[in-house]
Amino acid sequence: MTAEWLFTGAAIIVLLVLSAFFSCSETALTASSEPRMHELARQGNLRARMVIALQERKSRLLGAILLGNNVINIFASALATGLLLSVFGEVGVYYATAAMTVLVVIFAEVLPKTYALGHADRVAILVAPAVKPVVAVLAPVSMMVGKVVEWTLRAFGASASTELLHRHREEELRGIIALHAGQDPEIRQERQMLRSILDLDDVEVYEVMKHRRNVEMLNVQESASALVDQVLRSQYTRLPLYDEGQDNIIGVVHAKAVLRALGAVGNQADKVNLRDVAAEPWFIPDSTSLLEQLQAFRQRREHFAIVVDEYGAFMGVVTLEDILEEIVGEIDDEHDRIVAGVRPQADGSYIVNGSVTIRDLNREFEWHLPDDEATTIAGLVLHEARMIPEPGQVFRFHEFRFEILRRQRNQITLLRLRPPMAAMPPAADA
Image 1 (tube, rainbow, N blue to C red):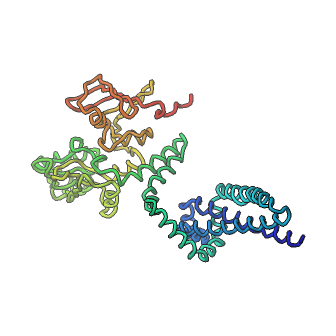
Image 2: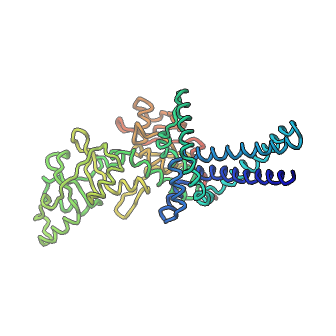
Image 3: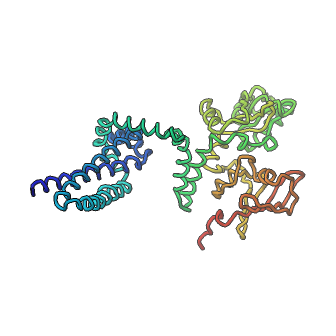
């Protein structure tokens, strides 16, 4: 009898160890970082590739692990019940239930899952070779179980589809970026850049283009010497060339091309024909997304495009630098004019030009002002107020306070913006 007890006790211990293995594997394989696994697989890690292969069929993986784990736990409980019945009689059932509950919960569930949760990537790589054949052997049974689950869910009007999981990938990635917390300037810059990259497909070029009223242009009807002088004095290297109205753009003049042409005619500016120097203009619709335009710039090896609306009217220009600035922030060089668009005040408010874009404010101060209906901060006030406000009027939208300071005709040119306390950047150390 003693040998039988020893054998049964050893069997129960082995089954508990196997149960702990399945519990640990379940947690590790579902909690491991998919990006990290993909990076390790790219570096040639075969076990990481196994983890990815198992995760790609997550329902089959979970079905096999849970099936094996439950069979083991039931078998271990049955052995313990039989053993204690032989010792204590009918009351042994209660002893077996209490003992196996404690053993299974602590040593086969909580302990292995807690460890696996804290070392998910490492454990997943370790257990993948052992779990893979188990999943393969139990695949038929787990598939049958999966079908029963799917039919049961359908009977109650639910769905087992994983389509929503794929839809939420971007939200998950944004959440990971938000968890990259800290007020260190480098960390803030990384957060801003990563968010901006994800936004490229949602932002259209009209939101970042230089508006036509701010575009420096060349009138082909002017004298050649005047045009050459304008090109050489301009802060820009590319200027649109128009004829008989700014909507009729006939070319784009590059300063280097003008310099080459000027050298070819002995520096006689009146002999330079800008029609011959100008490159063919590239027109794009204002609804083009920044991601599409960035790809187009790369394919065409261009840096400059003319933006037009649905009627073909000239709206403005967009450059490669404009799109890059959406990712990395403002790029200032010796040719850029630094315009003071936002001025912090001692009381925590900001004096903001009406033309400052909402995206720039959100990126710089990590605010969350909506930019679906308006591009600039002045446009947001007009949209929310549903009126053209007068100087001195105060509005509260999205927990921010907007005070109109200056208006030119129907355009808000200057306002004071006070963010909620939670959105204000931390004070600098003294």
